[in-house]
Length: 120
Length: 120
DNA sequence: AAGATACGTAACTAATTAGTAACATAAGAG
DNA sequence: CTCTTATGTTACTAATTAGTTACGTATCTT
Image (cartoon, rainbow over all chains, first blue to last red; front, side):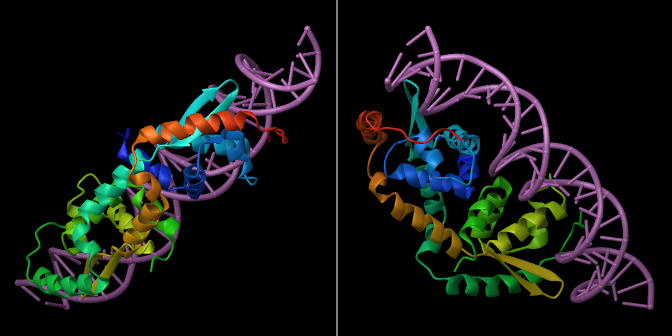
């Protein structure tokens, strides 16, 4: 599905791009419409963000004459979310109190380990 | 909980940092242990990543004498995942085919709209 | 106490990225 | 056909960031 998980994560790192995805969540938007939502940016800035989202597979752009209509593709997003959920599922049901308990136990164990290598 | 959602997203954008979180998923780790997992990086490089994770609230560091034990804090992670799930919940159950249908309908509607502003 | 280990901070470098300026093409409207 | 609108690409700039170097402190081991 997604072209590159890393590209998806990087795309989501920027707040403007997350906002763009939010816009598209409610339906496809023409590029100009998206540009209008960010008056603090030039259209090139916004388009650059769209490029990043497109590269990550999160946005698809359809050409209609001189218009470009951008729509959301949730598949890559869904994929990373699901991967993170499955990875950390054991934690999800627990509070941070449990993490704290583990930290206490592990600390004791760590202290008895001999160290071999020196710092780089 | 999390100090700043943006900081969390930014922290997750880097693959090394995601790997560090994966390590900590299995239990707290001493800084040197984490450094050892990334022989391609200097310890300062790794520590810088840990700093970013700590700033984002994803990692907690406990001092034990000269040792630093780092443990995972899933709360900020959980928070952003849940926010994204709730936002896109309407999409999650559907395939990309449905998104495609919406795109077709919206395009027709978009074309009838008059445009007022000129490009920036 | 001496030497080893673990970690810290500041400065620096190279690469990346967010954003803009300059110039351009193509489609739509009248 | 002319003018307007929508969008594209390249080059540039400033800021941010990934990573290293240089220098240092604190704790632990013998």
